[in-house]
Length: 191
Image (cartoon, rainbow, N blue to C red; front, side):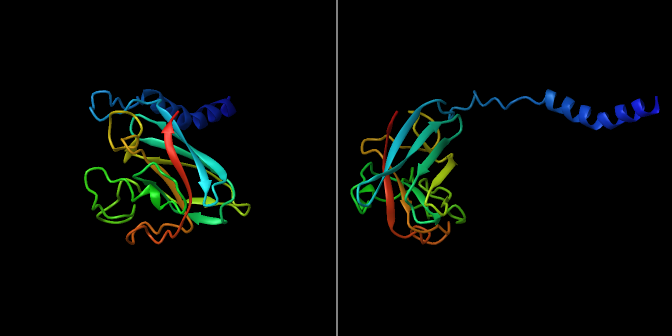
């Protein structure tokens, strides 16, 4: 009897925690005009400076931002900066992709850690393993592929491109956080 009572007492914190979970409801943002249409998707074929296909980026629109899944091979092992660039062109050395997208303020300073930033093209770094392989997911609220919603619309008249840089982005220094050369690029297109 005592063992059964102890077991029941031991389960009380778990039951209380689960009861709390049951009463939690998801946030309903349907009344917010900036809500984007989830489910839109697109893709970018990533190429290196020699024009060889090295991977892809799959873009999926969420209700509050854009999920970008990057799968690539053949990169130098280590950290690499990734940015969304304003023009949908990837002619090596990828300067044809232009500068970062900047919705509203083209003078917004670069950097996720910059007090005055970030600009709309800033993304977290990705890591290539010892074999040069990347498998990563990034999320941004500053860009979108849905026709309406928050952030920079990536499929405007001249499109946009995802660019991978040679080095890590320090997320603060100008103009690109010390990320270095553009080593891979992919034009973003509707799926």
